[in-house]
Structure formats: C-alpha cells, structure tokens
Image (cartoon, rainbow, N blue to C red; front, side, top):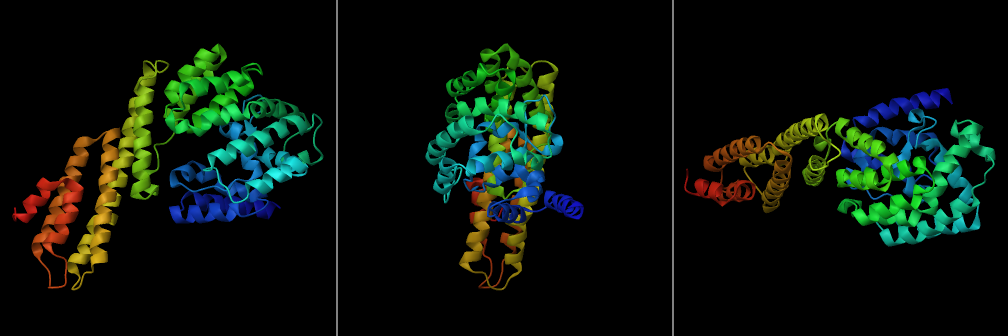
Length: 402
C-alpha cells in the first residue's frame, strides 16, 4: 500500500504539468472505473482545469449525490475538523451505502449514459437520491467508515453538514444549474434560505457550492450577506480566496477554450469590481488579479499566435505545393486567434494586443509579398487570414502592395 500511494503521488506530480489531451484522457479513464479509490487523487492537481477543458463527466451516483455540496468538497489531506467542508475520502463510503439500497441502485442504473450536462436528468435523479440520502444514511457510524481515513467522531458532524444540503438539494441545484447566469439572485437567495435553519456550517457549504461555479461571485456574496449576517465573513473570505488564486491557465487550453475562459474571467472581474463588500485594499487586490490575468492571457495569445498562424503560414510559404485544406486550416487558426484577442481585451492590455496584431500582420504581409511557386501559397491566401485577424484595412494594404 505504501508503494502504491508513493506511485500515486509521483503520478499526480506528472499530471499537474500534463497537456490538455493527457488530462482529458486520464479523466475519461478514471471516469470509466466502477470504483476509483486512491487513484482518484490523480485528478486533484487538474480539477480546476477540467471545467475549462469542457470535458463531459458521466453521471455517477456519487457525483450526483454530492452536487449540492460540490463547493465544500476538499482533498482529505486539506480537510480540517470544525470547517464547513467535506473530505473527498468520505464520498465513496457514503455513496456505497446508497448503492446498496434498491432505490439508490435504481438511480445509478438510470444515470448510465447521461452526464452533468443533462440538466433535467440531473434534477430528476438528483431529487430522488438526495431525498434518499437524507432519509436512509444512518446516524450510527457505518462499518466501512475506517476506509475514509477519518475517526468515528468525524462521522456525525459530516452527516450534519450533508443532510441539510441533501434536503434542500433540488433548490440548490436550481441555482447551481444557472451559475453561469450569476446565478440569478432570486435562485441564490432561495437556495441559501433553504439551509439557513440548519446553522452556519451547512449555510457556508451551500454558499461555497454556489460560488464555485458562479459567474458573478461578488453579487452572490452580497445576496449571502443579506440572507444571514453569519455569511458576511465567509462570503468575503470566498472572494478573497478567488483573488489570491493564480490567474487562469489560459496557455494550457486551446485558443477557443482560452477565449471562453478569458470572457468568463473578464465578466467575473467586472463583477468583483462592482461588489460593495470589496472596498479599499480589497479593490487593490482586484486590480492586481486583473493585471495577472491580463499577463497570462497575453502570454497565451503570443504562444497561440506562433502555433496557430505564424508557424503554419511560414511552413506553407516555403512549400512548393499548398492544398486548399491547408489554407483553410491557416484561416481557422486566424479565427481562433481573433477570438482569443477579442476576449483578452476584455481583461485588459489593449495596447499590447494592438502591437501583437501589427507585428503579426507585418510578418504575414512579408510572406504574402514574397510570392511562391505556381502551386504554393499566394498573396490572396495570406490576405484572407490577415482580414480575419486584423480587418479589411490591413488586408487592403497587402492587396495594394503596401
């Protein structure tokens, strides 16, 4: 066991620096396992990337069961007693109890072939399994609890954290499902009030779950502070945690997904700037985060410019024969770059993007003016990519030989 855990730790370090395709392949391999156990730890370093990568996660009973507590789940090694968090090691043990119940087994069977993207299915099956969990999970410590690495005394407070969230599961899911729209303040307030009577711990766990996917965490924090004075501190702490996190890993994503992430980041920053709970030094932290995100996005754009357009254009310019498919691929690269550049400007650095585009256009114009063989890259081929990237004026300058 010691050797196995050591190997998992080594693999986890390798996964942290893996490219997108490797991360996606690993996630799909683990999702295909009926029981993941310790190997689930391999995903810990890249969990923040999974959503940005757009991977569709299969709808397993354990994942469905803990959706109302999604933001409160932490690695076992990071869990601390007396906090509104749930150690990930408890999930398989609690889910196994439900799988042994006929209704839980029926839900697991009905979930096969579906994913978290199937929101109506999640809502319907979730309502069943959340109600079941709140009703049948025992007050006594389960026999397999030792598999969690926790003490018997940890079971009762963990169950006390989970039960209110399960009882309010459908209401919480209504807000989580629309987190990309804020979530809407009315749904967020309803979800928080649904667990308020259970005390500050379930309330803080629900807030963390909503905040994990919220596109407007600042507005959510204001709603939370209005629901309960006990949430003002945790709400501000959640916002501070967001601002202390490293900037998004734009460079780890393909340009289209990086553009989507940049737009989401820009909206989130605008929301945080408008949040009245973030005043004084906290607004300075927002500006610092914006600068870091801007630098990360511009670095990703520079790398993408070489990989998506400059490199392919140079190779085609040197080739004696160029196909329509190769030219079309170059144009698609220009479109991906344009999407990333437009999104990046929402974060900041407009002048830097202007310079980068000018440099790229100058490089492409040089290739377009150099001319090629009869079957090689033509000036018109280059012109189309320039027009996509920089607009018709830049393309016209090439057409006129300027």
